[in-house]
Image (cartoon, rainbow, N blue to C red; front, side, top):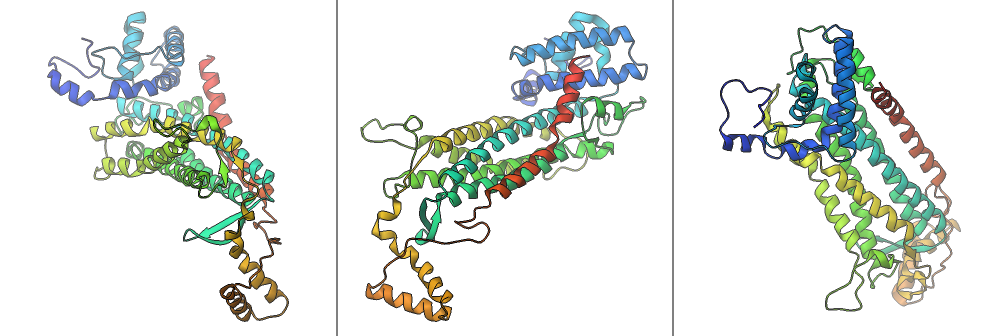
Length: 446
């Protein structure tokens, strides 16, 4: 059995070890390549302050690149008896390079190492989520423009209310994604600060160059106060989880609309046949399982901030092992959200719209407000116009005019999709992912 980084003369009871390690080996696979990147930056800095020789740095960087390549190919694993990703990387280096491999831990603790790994992993995942969200956004805007002249009923209290349009329906979710992306950008900026050098939460007596590792890893800045850097564990995950939950909320609502509008009672849209599933007993069924699962997964994702909060809520400053459990709910959540985004984008790009919904007489009364407004424009007081149309409806005399003329910003006739697209572009530009990408590329090129 491999020795723990912290183990001295007394070995831990195996049941205690099983309980305390938990799912860390499984979860740390998510962090493997990011742990390697962090180590590359750290040892580059150690060489600059005289704690490593130039030749030792070259040897270590070469081996770390090999380990990074393993992780990229999905071939990195944590051996039985090895506690976590940090221990595995150090063990692999020591096997190849002997005592040189043992030098990489100078000036850091597993505390700031896992903090760094989580931040590097999370910022990469945020970038991927932002890209998937932007793709869905453009599909929704395109569909809004394509179907902008197709009217559909709008509802309040699930009662037929007023005219809406597919331009409005698709466009509303596009604009919702703009706000979701703004939240995601704020989470990214809070995440993209360097905790490395905080060690166990109280700094180090080594003359660490924290500005150098910040630059090497492409962070916007560092977490300056070393105690706060440790206090950020759990807080960062919670903030990111809130942003993910906001985005998941938009997807869940869109999925619900699509399921409802796809049902025969509505018949507003038709989902692609290849995106529906059948019944084991009813040969006619085409079930919207993809959107039902999307709705369920996204509703589960909306509970993520509360799960993280309940784990970290009653902890004082300093490190506690409780924080390990956050990884189990946090790390897998990104893939789940990305899957939901991809499925939604695929279906919304291929969804078919019923262009003749309003041929059904049951929707006639939704044009009553249009008639009230027409009378008011012609000089009748609004309340009198309202009463007249109401009495006409009761007497069965109301005849709808199904031509609508809405011109104000954001209405059926003036969707402002170009302005919504401008807002999204501003948010996308504000992430500035290029800095982190360039830094990681240069680090791997050393």
